[in-house]
Amino acid sequence: MDLVFALAINGLIWGLIIALIALGLSIIFGLLDIINLAHGDFFMVGTVLAWFIVQSTDNFWLAFILVPIIGLLLGAVIQKLVIVPIKGAAALSIVATFGLSIILQETVRATFGPAPKRLLPPVEGTIPLFGIDYELYRLVAAVISIICLAAFFLFLHKAKLGTWMRAVRHDPETALALGIPVQRIYTITFAIGFGMAALGGVVAAPITTVDFRAGVDILPFCFIAVIIGGLGNLQGTAAAAVLLAFMEGVITAFADPVVARIASLLFMSAVLLVRPQGIFAGATS
Amino acid sequence: MVEPISSHSILRIEDLHAHYGKIHVLQGVNLEIPAGGAVALLGRNGVGKSTTLRSALHLMPRSRGRIYFNGEDITALKPERLAGLGIGYVPQGRGIFPLLSVMDNLTLGLRSKPDPNILDEVFTRFPRLKERLSQKGGTLSGGEQQMLAIGRCLMMSPRLLILDEPTEGIMPILVADIRRTIQSINQSGVSVLLVEQNVKTALKICHQTYIMEKGSIAFEGASADLRKQPETIHRYLGLSLDAA
Picture 1 (cartoon, chains in turn red, cyan):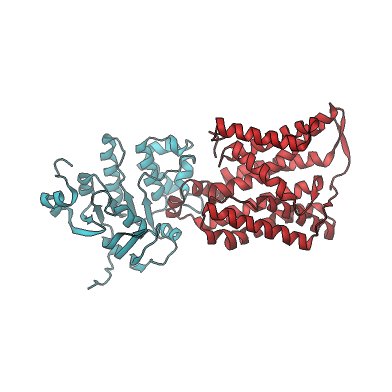
Picture 2 (cartoon, each protein chain N blue to C red):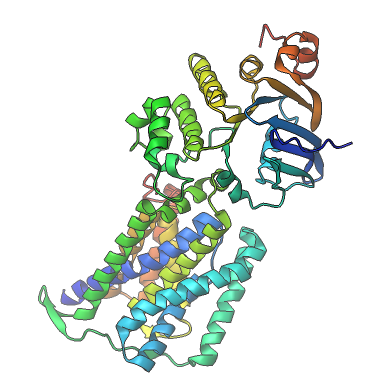
């Protein structure tokens, strides 16, 4: 029972981190119509950058600050170099971002190396939680993720830039006529998408392995969360990520992780059949 | 021969051409709005009125043509710069952001906090908006959304207000309200370019009228003169003014 509980909590916390990453995927899709097959690699780049910074400075919290900033900058550069030339063509975006994914993975393999590495948690120790000794950093990661998710939604709804992003998503032409720099908003959105995936990467790095292939597993999970939450529905995406990871966590207690992933895919298929608009439709931002 | 640019014109469109794919939609539109004036752009459906506006506002690609605003050549300017110059645009269908609040819709184009005096002016003109500030734009009625779309432009102190069919889909009882609003904005010194299907309303508001046919200007003259030419109205617009 303790194992079930621990895996359920693990799943919940993993879901909060995935929610950060999936939201990045969702805003990029919602605003730019880009199906970003490199999004998992943005997460992976976040974990690897965190590893490099911790190796050279021995300061995880510095990595926590720097990695999302580097992610934002990389995102802006990639948007200009890779996304602008394809002019939002969804079909081309699959090819372009698949190419980008390979470039990112191979760059990391060439520099970081092919062997997975571990990053020690910055907060050590355990605390008793409902009868089990639970790793403290995982709870810290959960709190950080919740704060970041709340900050993201606050930004989207209260900051001018966030309001502009929501306006551009709905009607870019009218937004442009009102003086909103739509092209710059596209760049910023892509940058935020990368930044959030990288943030997810740095938070997750101490509880996962740092590996150039880490994004390959994350990407389908994010897509499943975006589809179940409802395309373009950000609150739905976040909720679906948490729900899915929790569900996979519980199933993993009884069966192989592959079975858990199959369950997620079946769940997604059921949602697509019954509620193709997503189970949380109606709460779009 | 191209006439010299009038120092009194607020907007001048010269030889504007645009294509939708291979279709040559605008075939050399010339149009001028005198500063402080109100100009109507009329024509049957599909002759290119909205395309003229969108093309002049850099919202769709042009094949040829030059645009002058207040004597300055703005042809190569980025589209997002036009609002800042003082060009307000109320698009067809009103362009309200349904999930943003009325207040967010109103202040969307501003880069700093709204000027309380301008906000007061807008609320004096449209008191209904003040009562619905926290409501989502999509929950407003068609008439209220039109007020919001116009108010949103007024927040940016425009010198020219471009309206694309502002009375479309509005309850007939409110059409006169919208007309009086546009007239009063024009009387306050803001120039107006109005695309309208409702010919009677357009002729009441605007001193000057252009009629488009097949992508270019087929008639240009004072609205008062046009009113006396029912055969012109019938030929280009397919209706009689009494029935309009």
